[in-house]
Length: 107
Length: 123
Image (cartoon, rainbow over all chains, first blue to last red; front, top):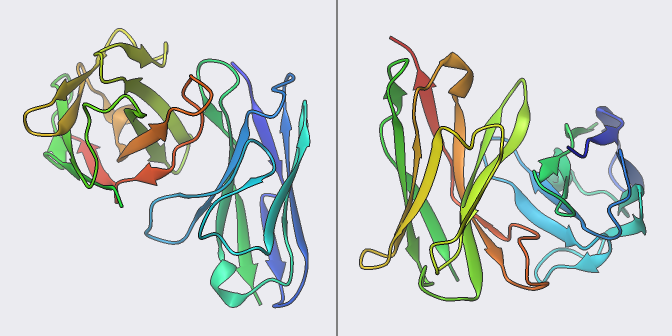
């Protein structure tokens, strides 16, 4: 099973800051890495697919990069509505797995 | 825009079978454009993929649950279902039904999720 490890687990940030969340895979997964945002009491929402491809309707301040084992989700100019938990997810091999999540708190 | 809605009992006794149904609107479970499936979430283990089904009826399951799980389609009702038998307290979770578009010929990302339903396993 491929283990995804996110860092940090928690981050407190101020609006307009640039935020970087990393996801490291226990083995190479090429670009089969996807990012989700989950706000409190809501279901996860797809942000980025295949490591760096944007999703229609998702603000352009969200971007992704990486391949192989190391991936990054970047939020440029953070907004208050971005307070949420962010998860990475790999679809390279079964079973599909998720990172443990990174919780963003807005100061 | 597709919408998914889970339904089923919120309380299941240990050793019994957990049964949930996902009703799809704005899309068809008979379409070859998507996989349909289930993911659960707990505070302790986080998000756990359970399995998926294609319109042909072909299923893919998480091996950690495979002996206990069944996912099936009801094309007449445009629904799909989850059955998990011999449940224990460890199966207490929020269960989400999901859609995964066929893009690279395999299950990749989940672009639609139901609102989730909490199932508690307790006597």
